[in-house]
Amino acid sequence: MASEEESTVKEPLDLIRLSLDERIYVKLRSDRELRGKLHAYDQHLNMILGEVEEVITTVEIDDETYEEIVRTTKRIVPFLFVRGDGVILVAPPLRTA
Amino acid sequence: MLFFSYFKDLVGREVTVELKNDLAIRGTLHSVDQYLNIKLENTKVVDQDKYPHMLSVRNCFIRGSVVRYVQLPPDGVDVELLHDATRREARGG
Image 1 (spheres, rainbow over the protein chains, first blue to last red):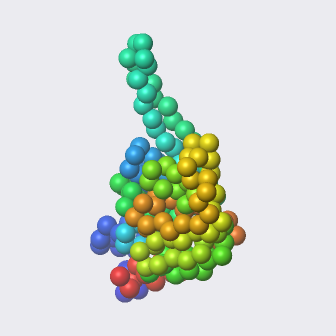
Image 2: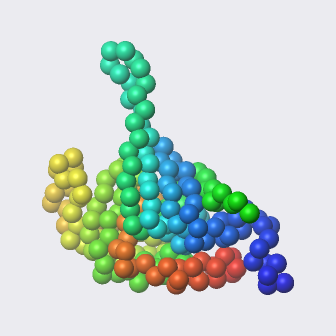
């Protein structure tokens, strides 16, 4: 019973539980994306991630040509608490098994 | 409850709180409550040139809902402890 509890995905949050201590992808509001190791989460999707890479995407319009210029800014943070209300989606790491 | 307990253990440590309006404030964590409202002391705005009106603010209360990130001190994260606490919380609901 205990092992079944550990491995089956019965509700959405189970998928995240199986990603503990794995690198996950998190898409956030205001065009932000995070990749980092999941160390903790709760039912609000508050999270603590480790070795986080944050990518912020901004689109600027060129004054003269009106072309859209897409810029991405990256930074690395060792440990980050992320408030759950900004989370849009969480994706587990790709499994090759 | 997990993060409330976690932040309580972090009281007295230096953290950087990033708000949803992009303002980032560094300071000593004075206290936290169940809504993850945060009180910081000896605060310093990270980008002072951009927010000069915050220069005189030395301590502040931050409503939990406006927080986007909290940058944690690397030695303030016990990974194993967090994993156990998370599994316990996931089981208990």
